[in-house]
Length: 185
Image 1 (tube, rainbow, N blue to C red):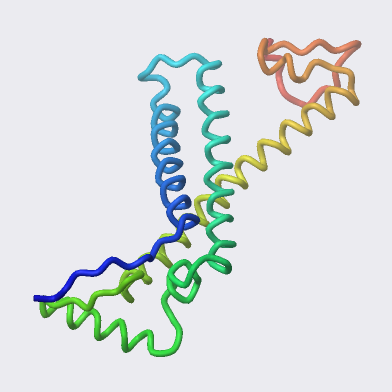
Image 2 (spheres, rainbow, N blue to C red):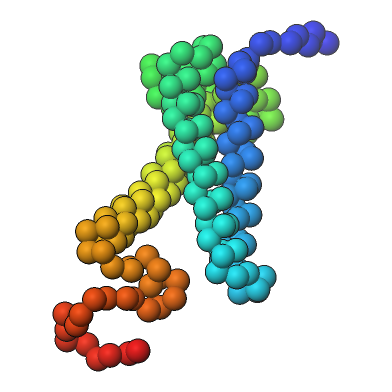
């Protein structure tokens, strides 16, 4: 009988990334579903804004955690490094073939870190997480630019553009410039 032995593999930085990422993804999915189904929950506009704000903050934690993991891939232990988590490198294809053949035969080779097939999955997962984080940041960044533009316009024009987003009415001194549309108010 083969003797079982314990191997130190996942360092604290890797474990922290994993669990923070797991929690962020669950929370983001939950909040996203609440926002998407706001009508079913009879959520007020103020409630939707609060959920969207919370979603953005958890998204920032998610993005920072992902950046942490990318940095940790340079500094972590040997199992946390890029060469151990991404597919590729010398002999990778042979190792993948050997692993898949042994796995199919019912006797998979044991790996302390990620096996060659798992490295493909990790590579895809990191790519998808990055796309998700960048997409979310672009959307959040657009929001930040939008809010900044509204505040600057409010200050420069001395108008009520921000309050008009709440009341639907904008207070303007004098006659506004005609934009060619009909007056809806």
